[in-house]
Amino acid sequence: MCKEHKVINDIIIDNLHLINFINLSEGEKRMVLLWRNNIIIRKRMFNPRKIVLKEHNSFIEKLKKNTSNKYWLIRNNKNYYIGVIYLTKIDLAYLKANIGLYVNPEYIGKGYGKILIDCLKKIAIDKLSLSTLQAEVLSDNIPAINLYKAFGFKQILHRKISLKEKNELADVMIMEYIKE
Image (tube, rainbow, N blue to C red; front, side):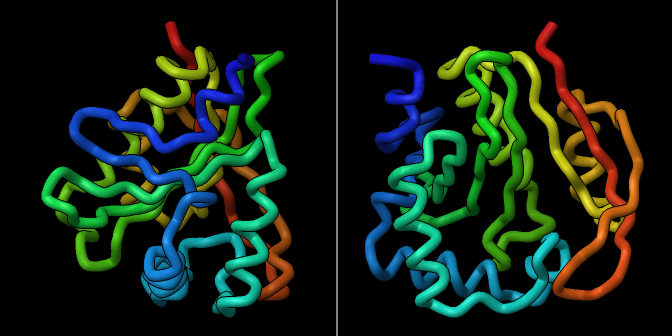
């Protein structure tokens, strides 16, 4: 089948189980929603408002039909859930995608972001053969910016965008990784 088929199922990378959001159990869906609604995670999102369960479940249902956005929950070999990674705007014709991640709030600052970004790069580059990855990061999210830089991302653009939920402008850094 086509390359898109490779990202529909769960994936194993380096003893990590990447569970596609469309395959999450009800308990896993609720856990991811709790993480997403945690104030530490929310304040670094472009949409910082709390998400309700019905909206969260609807989002996951829409992913079943969406070939350009894929989300995974990451569980390590000790059965600890360590975070969420995602590819959006997947474009197999131009071999590019946007990426994002967030760490389980219990593990923030403990190095798990490195594991998550490594998984993202392996899926995007090794499994999908993409060559360009972009990340949009709020400019005050210094830990994320430093993480992306450590993995070879370069700042390509700095701009202001309107955040509907906050009714304000936000500084955003666009970072890019190009496979050599």
